[in-house]
Image (cartoon, rainbow, N blue to C red; front, side):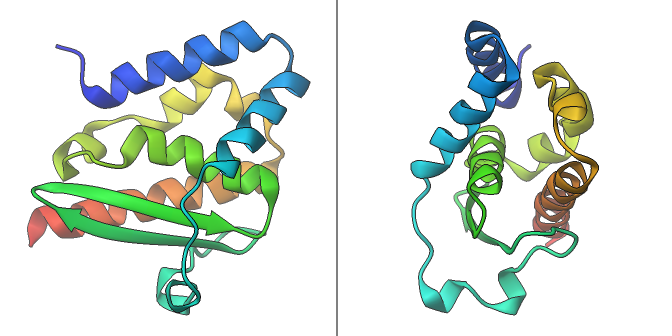
Length: 141
C-alpha cells in the first residue's frame, strides 16, 4: 500500500520531470516557497530555528489529531522553496509515517542530492532531521 507521503513524492517527481532542466526546476522550487504561510515575529525565535542551515530557517511543529502540521520560513528564496517541498511531503502526516519515510531516497528521486550544493544539502538534511526528531518526540509522548 502506498503511503500519502509516497503519493506526494510521486506528484513532485512528475512535476520535476515535466520541467526538464535544473534551471526550470530551481525556479519551480522558488515558486513553491512563495506559497508558504508566513510566520509571525513571535514564531521566529531560537526554539524554532533549525541548526545546521547556512540560511536562517525556522520550523514550527503543531500536533493535530494524531498528525503533525509543519510551517516554516527562511530568509533565502531557494531555501523557502525547499521548506515548501518538505512541507508537501511531511505536513499533516502521522509521526510513524514520517519516521518510516526514507527522505534521502526521496531527495535522490527528485535529483536534489546531485543538484544542490553541499551547503544546501546539509541544510536540507538538517531540516529533515528536525522534522524526524519532532515526529519521534511526538510518537514517544
